[in-house]
Figure 1 (spheres, rainbow, N blue to C red):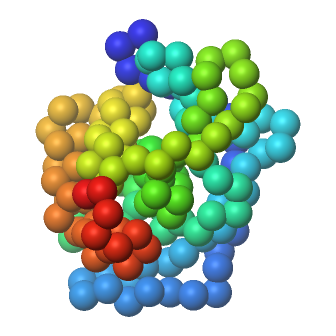
Figure 2 (figure 1 turned 30 degrees about the horizontal axis):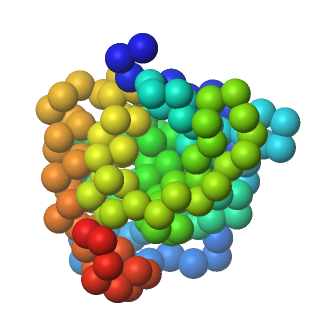
Amino acid sequence: MKHGQFTGTFTLRPVKHKRYMLFWTRALYKFENDTTNPLTYHCPGGANIRPADGMITDMGTVPRFAAVFISKDRFLKSYIIHDSGYNEGGFRVARYGTNDYRLIHAARLIIDQQLRECIAAQGGDRVTRNVIFAAVRAGGTELWSRRHGKRRD
């Protein structure tokens, strides 16, 4: 398997809060994983990543002008995995065949690279993956620093 794959279902519930950014409004949602079939990203190397239940996501911060080129819905699962990584400073990972998920702390660069890999798994072409990667590298510094300080970029 060249790229991983996603399985599982989830629900997003609106949170009564909106963050106003310079060029767009960002709505926030509470992520609720399905208890019987949770959203899971199966990495090509055999590990599984599962986002934290109850975390808050913006479903991908895509400015309005860029929404013409990049649909938030197309890569929603990838954005959820990425937001979970930013929220927790790492990923909840289990070895293939087990259900023992443990938080593995990761540098911001690793979390952003995982987003690029997840987008590839959802059919994103190289240009789209790299544009989104560059955008999160440029725009994610402030959020990461607020949550995790200057550690591991």
